[in-house]
Length: 381
Ligand code: PLP
Image (cartoon, rainbow, N blue to C red; front, side, top):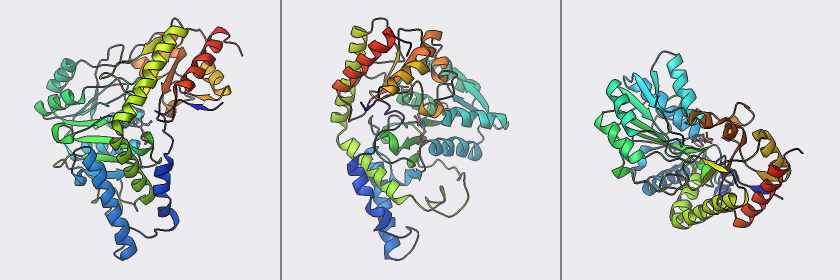
């Protein structure tokens, strides 16, 4: 058996995307910074890729900067903003991805900013009034709030947050790594300054992503070198990665309704079947459309085993899922997200994140729930 329900950690590379990338490893050679024909050809393709991405999200191509992925994009926005603006406070929550929380903690430890962690309800929501009052007390602030949480799927209302940030003259960064390629964006009507994305979350290659920086916002590069990405991100461009990312992005947005219908049907089906076949299950985070991402269902299992046993037991049956975000597996402290929303101890130990992708089927969900029924009944292997 080989069932992959860990698409929030990484989606499989779409074979069509791979086919689009392959000529750029051996055949289409050169460096896009070179002025000869080989170089110019690659430069044009990079700019086309930038335009493709920008068009789908209502941005200007000059607002898109290619990076090595979501982590770099988050770092570039947060550290870059603190370097360039007289920011005294960063307002965020403890359930952000560590690419954000660790960056904020590092800046605070260096004495550069004060971190303000907003309170969360038990489903991972913030109260917008808490954000307003934090902004009143911190007039020179950067707000960093993700669109969808990668472990529990809860969505923040980035439209409302953007408006509040604008009213208070604060910069707003959103980690949209889990939603880019899945939810629609129109940056012409969204008040947001920075937005981070990663190709391997939307069936593109690993090791490439982008940062949107709103026109007029000026930050400097984190690394030093050449003048690539308009001096913002030195280093020879990852041509196959960038072109693969743009191709994958285009495909996601051209098929978005179909994609969302499929993902929601899997999530709803799994939730209903779990409630039916495993009485006592509860769900961490929001689970409804409009409030949650269709890709993630975080489930607290009705058993007393530690989560490693659940994951281990599923793993030996060929079913890949996560207890939390992939970057922290093995940390054995429980998920910082579940702790952050005050999940009860049982949920901390027994929660599984199922995350869905386009290749998944309802049959795979049935098989997975069947195995869970066996594991929960006979927890000792
Ligand atoms: N932000 C979120 C919400 C994520 O889920 C991830 C990856 O899991 C990242 C950032 C980091 O992205 P990358 O793996 O491209 O560095």
